[in-house]
Length: 398
Image (cartoon, rainbow, N blue to C red; front, side, top):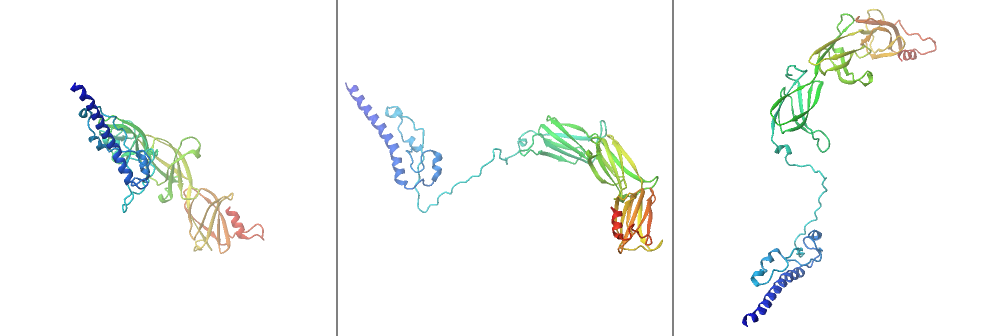
């Protein structure tokens, strides 16, 4: 009889303790938050909405440490109540004299922000990639004059090539991770771009440039040699038969200088002086060889002066105009002793001094450098007596 009478009492005590514990845990912190939270949002301000609930009206809150105060079900003879799964924030009160946290304004970041950490290749195993270059198949290694640039096969975010390493050594050794790279080798005006698949095995790879050298010079007439200071060359790559589509490879090349070029066909333009002495020639450069070419200039170096008599003193402050026999303007100059190079042919020399115009015809022979004298007695006579001599000189110079 005693046992059955005690069981209902134990059940009532257990239920009462459980209800009391739940009531104390749920109601007491809420009352504390409401009594102390007279402000609107408190320290967190509008950021309270990030953690759930309304910023101005906080919901019920149970601290995680309150779980330690709850009795276990096996201790009171009752099963554990439903566990708390959500914790709402407490709206902290505004304390007088305490500074409020400023609003956080973070700039927007791109989808692929640049990383400041180490490159991914830094964490990969690195091996030695050895390189050397030759001009042609089976040729000797190039001892100097090389520039090596190794790029990653994967471009950077802006699309530009990513340089991995560079060197000016004849046989560089690059410590790189296994992978695919783009190699550019420059040798003077010659160069090659090659893909390199590096497997991580230390080997020496040979790059065949397929390039050669070109050395240029010129003579005047049959045997004459022009002054090097007045001689220069332009080199164009012949991509097709149309001259306007030729690509300029090198300009103002002095004589006797070796220019390193890729093997192929080129057009050479020789300039003697700065007037009309121009000669063109087509030349082919072969791989592994030095090609020497000498062009022939049909021109002469002339020095002009205005004198009152043959062998007399040159008159200063004279303006000169050189035209062809057909009236095409070739060159203009000012001075007592102007010097210029003209291609062989017939010309008209016009000298102007103190509003007077003098002229004389002259023939240039290739390789015959000479002084050209214009006498003051050789005054230009207009066809129309009423015509101004200055207008006649202007017409002859057009």
